[in-house]
Image 1: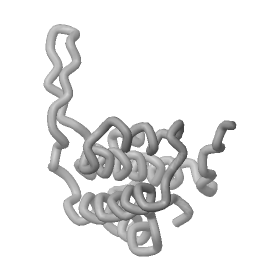
Image 2: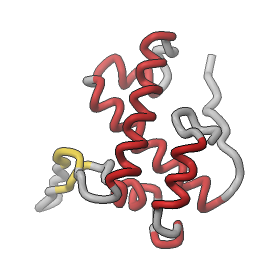
Image 3: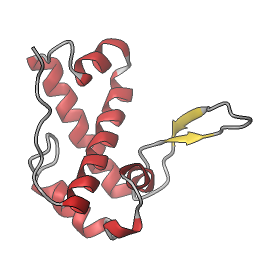
Image 4: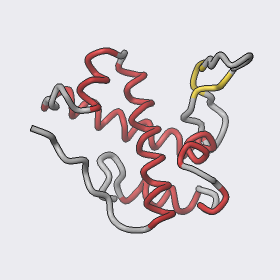
Length: 127
């Protein structure tokens, strides 16, 4: 619940609706299971990523996207450092793409916390 955008409701939903964390090899596998990663149509060594693949756990995906939209809306209103990851994404990408990217990132962080334990520490701001 210490991750920005993940409160008690989403934390409980991840525990209740999510498959056992041992099922997934990485955070990307978990995010793909939820349906927050782009579909890969790669061939001949050329990597091609398509639209977000909407297969997976529908309720959990919706909750993560709603939470991410709140994080992005708050960041736009209050302002974020321009050199932060979120600030750079907001400067060069459309808002909905940033929302899905934040949801993807939160899903990966949640998987890591469930797998390794511990508490979330926000990235340090460099001066």
